[in-house]
Length: 259
Image (cartoon, rainbow, N blue to C red; front, top):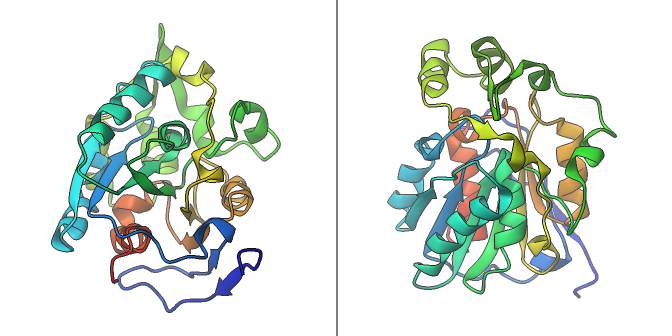
């Protein structure tokens, strides 16, 4: 029945040093719609290449994958960049967001081609919710202290990037990611979503248990609130790079594809 929550514990995901507990809420009690398209959206301190470990795993499974280049200017412009990519898809599409881009997933996810939503250590605001105020109800994550501004553009210092954003990656790899860090505009942080697509679309969530950029307990709260199918991955904020097998399998689940 739709009012029942199915709770199940899965086996360890291959390649993931993670303790996994999955819960499927009311929105996802039916089998996922089979999708052949995946649209990935990156968050702050990154660009579209942050999905480079996940993309080949999804392509090997036969999915058509597009990584959006988020302009990181204003929320409406960021949402519009995702909507343009969604418009080009040829059928049911899984929309995936990491970090800040959970805001984009929540807003753009009402697009008629979106069959499922996946949040990877991501913000998941309700419609009109002040995410900053919500985040302040949890201990401030260490990465926040590492944000510096050059005028209207914000970025993470190298020290904070390596320690608090990409803390479980080899230093050489983290430095490559730091080199392509894209600054964000202050105006981006003032945006509020007008839609909460997770209220009407089946949703999945990957909590990063070692996250120093978004508080892991805040991630758990948001995942539980949306009744998402949830996994916990022992990873930094960049679980999509350090634990790509786990993240790819979660996306495949949302796409109705065999693991």
